[in-house]
Figure 1 (cartoon, rainbow, N blue to C red):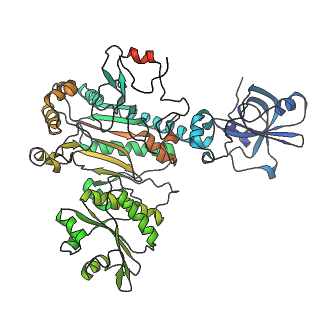
Figure 2 (cartoon, rainbow, N blue to C red):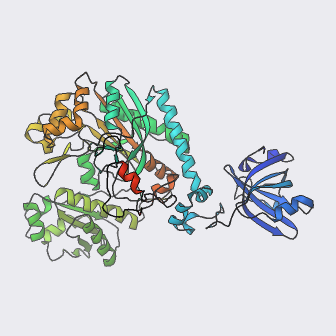
Figure 3 (cartoon, rainbow, N blue to C red):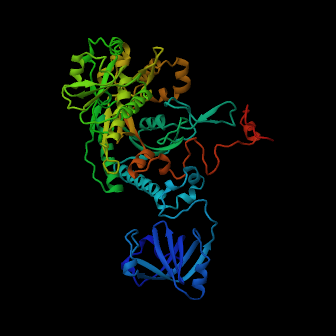
Length: 589
């Protein structure tokens, strides 16, 4: 076998040349004694003409879709009326001199024609035969983009002096915010490894080891409920640096992202990215991962209802809650649409969604009789006829989250975001709370327990820990979190104290984190880092709807692999070797 050109590489410049192609039959047409083949390989597709004559025609007559073939012939221009701009090779064709079948193919379970969209076939069927699905250029394009993104990351970070280091996949279970995948140890029955949710502790210890600049395109595992943007095993870009402040990390990542986008899409990002603190993100956008393409901003109406007689709002304010609103000057929503928005608010924890519409120098709506004229005037005074105010009452976080969800849905209803544009609206959210209060009065961490407290809030840890901010930052793109990181605790006494605040006993700290506390005692540099969700980033850059489309062999929404059948039952002997027993679904002997 010899390939002279890729199918998609042929052009008018090679007309008259003899070419040798290797690939798959994408389609076959027999027209009045001429056979037309579309031959496809990883570079694209080209038309082949087989004219009547001896062995070549006979060999082409038996070909079917997805046969693997070798074809030699001469490249020529297509007749002018038959030229097509649909493919880069649409102006040329190969006149075959020889046709050889390298591999026959059974009729595939779905049509693989590169011109057919994947939505025409059920996702589970495509995933079951993913090796066929990926023959379509539409399916392979995000995987190829992923390669380009990874290469650009390597090139940039290598030039910046970073060292790529692989960290273990069998490790100790540590708190990372989700359930671990556990791996039983055969040599130590009853003991378990955990697959890493991230390389967090290892990359910090690499800073203690003096590497100073580390990165890794790391495989990570989290046993959590699946969504379109989650997989049980996923990939992240992991970066850690020594002797840095927050601004150093943000600047590096902006320049890296700018380079990646330029190399992979040709677009030029403007840096620095906009930066807002967590409090403002929640107050203005109702989410800590705002879509900056959406121009709508929330309004706080708590002060306007401070002395209200409306029981629903009065009780909220009495309980230190807030009244959040969305003011829509030109929206013409039906009651059915408003009812749909209310369901969205309720699904985010709100008890309901009230509304007031300005009309003929007055107002009407679900709250028209509940509000005093002065209260209604206070929230509608600038609105033209038909202008609408949507309101939610509740705790600060519930009200923000509910109105944030409504804000995004309203933008979709009003078509405020051009989903077909190439706009990449990046931004940083900074100054997250360090801790989150639990119902029982204890605390958990907002990001992870290795995050450093904000320099200005160190004193709050012992007096009002719930008010302490962290030196943590998230990178968001078009309403999706694509990266998150922080400056780290680099002193053993502070790390010990953080574990204590989180409710770990001395015994738990020693057992689970003793090795890490010890490492901090031997001189740890100030350090910080970030992790990018590589799958999510490629998903957004390629414009596909699901994370599964950017992973070569993904799991489905149930966490199963339709291709291999994993997870599956195993022989009883394998389980017994691990010192385990299965109480249900045990396979037969």
